[in-house]
Length: 324
Ligand code: SF4
Ligand SMILES: [Zn+2]
Image (tube, rainbow, N blue to C red; front, side, top):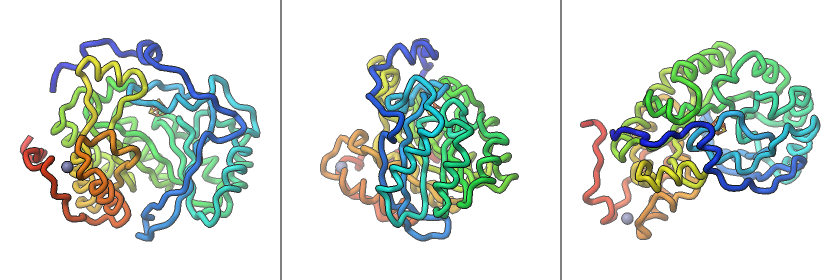
């Protein structure tokens, strides 16, 4: 690993490198979709995702671009339930729901606590509700919300990487112990947790990126998470583009994402998914992009290893992480 970073990337610098936010309406989610996901029981079922509009996350992680669709102020009580109600009218026959709020559901400046009861009542017909949170915001409030909910509550948290130097430089203001403590708290209270894991954050080369994503999956499962999602790191938020221009960051290859997904699935410790959003960013080969995307989707859904895609582009590039 190179000495990284050669530049000071602190909170102020990260914010100064940003572009403009997108216009958003506090009474409307900024997006919604329905995706297929393999459930814990092994069924492939539709899961709705509502991208809630709310106040920007208080943390300013180096790789995060979620601030783009946020407000600068706390939305009014009633706005979040209104957004959910509107989005649910667009979705039919969905049993599972992800409420993603570009930050932490349990950040009281993002989701007003007085809205919890109304939100819970809107969700009563679901089987599972998944929210996201920074590990440091996992506390009694999660239990309060869980107790109001009829569906099972699951909580996704960014572990990002267990590489201690890289994690501290992501400006997440969290240690791996904080993550482990949050998972333990949730497990003790019978709330399933899910981990987001980064593939190739800045400061790692391709092989190191694979190795540390695999180590991070190991740590997440050993801590007690039920599911891991591997996210290839991209540019586009200002800070990452800056690092790319200085040669400190290059996006990972789609082939590396396949390797890490295979590794995670073969552990058989829980579900492991690859984030398949905009995979064209991670491929320089038009001949195999569609095939690799299909392979990743199939492995996500079946949790089985699908035969590799044969293509010239990977003939001379076989990163063997086990030898590092
Ligand atoms: S905690 Fe999550 S939402 Fe907040 S800045 Fe970091 S990655 Fe983005
Ligand atoms: Zn190819």
